[in-house]
Figure 1 (cartoon, one colour):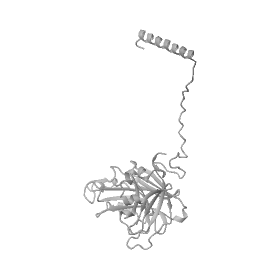
Figure 2 (cartoon, rainbow, N blue to C red):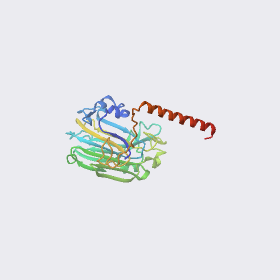
Figure 3 (spheres, rainbow, N blue to C red):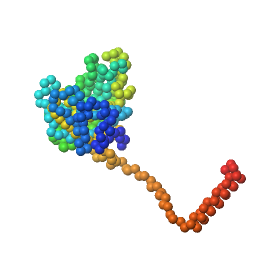
Length: 320
């Protein structure tokens, strides 16, 4: 099974996730730590700064258009805000996503559009997957079909899957994303504990198939992806909440990214049970033996005669 990335909770976070972890603001790094092989994502009670509601680790992109992304979570005694003042989703949280973001080539870092699928926990303590479109900054939507197919925002999108009570899923829950970018025939899938809860195909996920890619509605110019020049999914996991959210912590482990389906029996850091072990051919070991001195002289004499014979032979027949 071609593994692109895996983490078993043994090495320090700052070493394994150096490219993203070390770039996080200090307060975010303080909300992520290892605890008995699990990654603990923590957030304090409100009020929170914007950085304090994002206890996330960004895995980046892996240079492929099709991949699986799995992990396990251990929900503790989660607390939810039952009556948030202005955000209908403030009581829940997001914990993973694959995403693709793009914008006007000239200023795509400040205004951009996106498509993403998330695993989320609602304030009713239900686990679900969603798929939706989004935009960053003021301005028009990228494309009306794109907006209508995927909804205005993945957290508000009525097209959600699973919606399963956490209490019924056991003390450890395994989640897995699948995404494939293939023009108008793209796919998105999701599993909870090996149960397929989302199975979508024939989706126009890739923005390059839209006419707005070369003539965007914001700047009337060409678009570009935020990460690279090709439609590669960006992966992220952790605890992402509203600024009004209560104190929470979620634990993650066995994070795996692969180009093949990842079975629940896969041991992170080990050999997949469905692949034969690599057999290394045995090598000969030279053992020094103590020889009698007369025998050593005899062997040296034999080697001397062989050398003289080869030397004469090559003098007489230099073309050999």
